Length: 271
Image 1 (cartoon, one colour):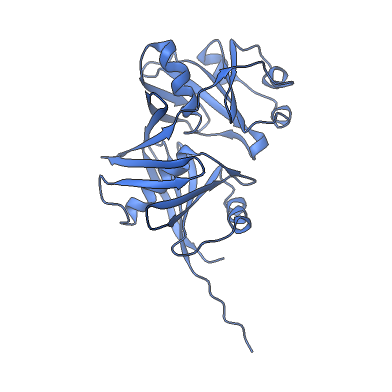
Image 2: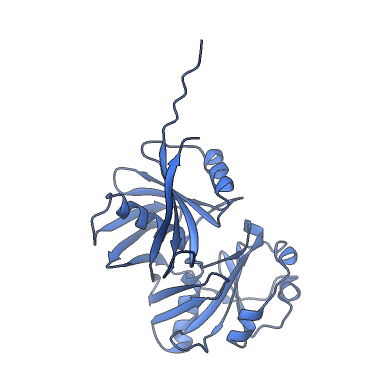
């Protein structure tokens, strides 16, 4: 007797987040699960198949949206660009009213997003970095002496002397992979007009050598630069090959992150 297969088709998107045009910013996959509640192994397999820095899984839980994020190799507790992409996908599918708010239930608590014209504002927890000695091998991996080293629960935050030093940095990813943190944020004041600070984010230990634009890193970067620059509203640029703009507002223990998102393709997942 032939077995009947229930494919339970789910919608799948690839969306460029913190992007002003297609093929810029940070691409994220977004899977709308419908009423399916898959296990972690399945979600990790899908994320590995997508092979993007993050794949988001979104499910209506009755009081909002359950949201989880996976790199190709691990689940993470906080991701900005895939949250932005998730809110964008829900709005495009008519699941969020124009200008309406979304409440995402995540491993970092409840995160909210609001549509403001073409922009999406996100309310995230601040992840302040405190001064810390560099991990063994960190300076060697970066290949240069930083101005200052700090750390929070996720990452090292390393300040460099100039924007040029950040842009031209060529770290040793194999050495960075040995450091027991999610990733390393490298930053400096911006010299490019229109931006307050610049950064890059390296996370080879999490399966991503260099992330194009990292929303969650700005949960640390905003609180780091706000007192140094004397302002709570900042415009940041993440200087990866793709590049992306993040507007950051620091408000006590919360950080607002704002950016645009653009759908590159949509399809169906039937595995």
